[in-house]
Length: 239
Image 1 (cartoon, rainbow, N blue to C red):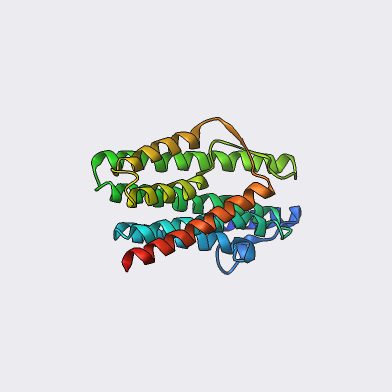
Image 2: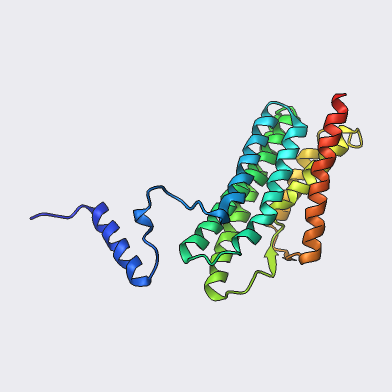
């Protein structure tokens, strides 16, 4: 008696079910993933964040904060770009997952490593950074669950968030660093404290309304001004 290999059987079953449901057969892709324009900004944001991690490890803190803010700007626009295309179910689900994975690196791992390094790699700073990344991970995974359920029930745009969005650290952390670098904050203890507050906000059950067009434009302008201001201060400080 001959048995079909599980891998081939499951693959054939998946192709058959996909064809029946009218979905694209993603098993025939030559390369894993999606690479259209709707995910370009998400990928760019993650690459900016990884560059920021390398800058932080090398104690180039100004550059690390600029990378963090650039990742934040990419995140602000990626949803608007993705909404311009009529995506199928697989593309939408992929967009949800890849956005959160990118956010974990950009607004979880990068700030955590930044604070650990600037706080002289003390055990306490390491514990705080680890807890912060864990809170970001939980927040993003929970968001994915709620977002997939919401999209299965309605096609309306999201009106609110549960918990503080992780992207807020892209604004608060650079401001804290500027205040520290210009001696308004006298000690690096301000950074672990900020992480604790932000981490608690990530997993808090508070409902926050999604910003409207005007507020979103103000946040984008603030982010751009922060980037330009930090680049100017960094250049001025080197002279």
